[in-house]
Amino acid sequence: MTDAKRTYQANHMANLANASAIKLFHEKGYQGGIGPSFAYSPTYALNADPENQIAADNAEQINADLWMDIYAWGRYPKLVMTYL
Image 1 (cartoon, rainbow, N blue to C red):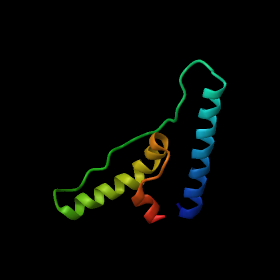
Image 2: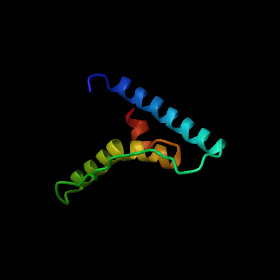
Image 3: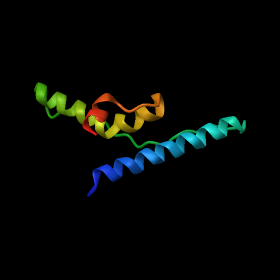
Image 4: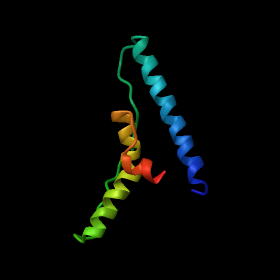
């Protein structure tokens, strides 16, 4: 990733497009299921050291919750918004 801001902006636009497509699908009353697809891999701490536990939680929020929270709740995690 050479331009993080541009990458996050592009992903935000993709999230908006995804939400619009799902909304239209439901408004038109189409039969079937629709939703986002997400490849998830959990993040684990190296050990029980509290610093490593916090680092793992932060990584989980930035690498996974960033995408899943917008799909499930319609908002980005607070940690991610602080980071951005």
